[in-house]
Image (cartoon, rainbow, N blue to C red; front, side, top):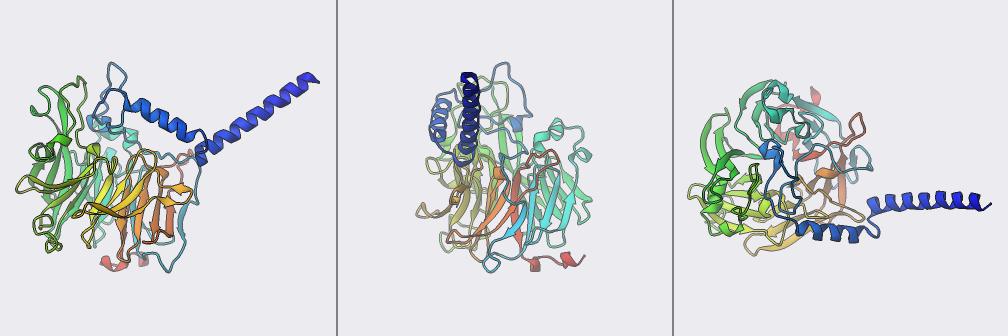
Length: 435
């Protein structure tokens, strides 16, 4: 009898432990906050290393790399999702959502999809990277599967970034129009003058940073719509020569064998001058807004004058993405955070936060890397919660009116949702859904 009681007790304890573990990981009950706090304290006292393996080609070290708060996480194409929301699109309130077609890229394949409000695919583009960069070690790394970002033009041609490889322009049938092999990464912006401002990179030794250390030098490459490069600017030099140079990490004490990613620039926007009446210098036509992820800073700069005009971020945001100047003169961005993420809107003139959205009650935004946001014409905000593989559309009052969850792969894993953009149907020169 005692033996039976003993085994019953073991079974009960196992059941309770399993249930507690599920609740711990899904609902963040005790001791989740305590464990998170302890882990954060441990990480904060480890040696600092400002780097991103993804940009360096994954060079291995002779010693284990430290895991600290200021290094860029190695990018992967699989999300953190373990439990699933409803797959595909869900219209929660059709009267309040912004109608249109949504373009997105994920970590499951080198494709970009255009869907309607119900989640039906109305068009897609595909170009496996092996067909373009077959001789590049980076092209073969599975964690880079998927287009990093994409923009569709009115004639259904697509501009897309293969992260740290280059930029391609595809026609509506996915045939390459041109390919730029320049180490493009993350983001680009098309101006009203038909110029493309593209984030790219090269590996350089910069004496002002470190005598012998190779760094990832982020660049802004300006090209025309035919892929011809016109100009190139160094973002590292831009910051280094500004009054905000103190934000750059001190690298003179580092002795590492891989390139150091000082800034990890992850978004760019070029101003059209429409807001120059608010501040002629800050919002002048041609100025750019950059998100510098590794120093948790966004800046507005004048490329022609090689001058940083404005900077904001440290102690206010952490590892942010997708900074965008809005028509009202405010800036919207995805603040990744350490434990939870938030989309915030700030006034750059007063430097005050005026709006924020952290997700749904009991189901917060949580994307430690990636992430994107876009303000819609009707005032809603479309948020890409990348590591939870979903996009959510909220009203200004925080009401969820539309959502989309990426479907799983055949093996059950969930691909990262890199970013989503919404287009009005009148933007296109043809009726896509009629084809």
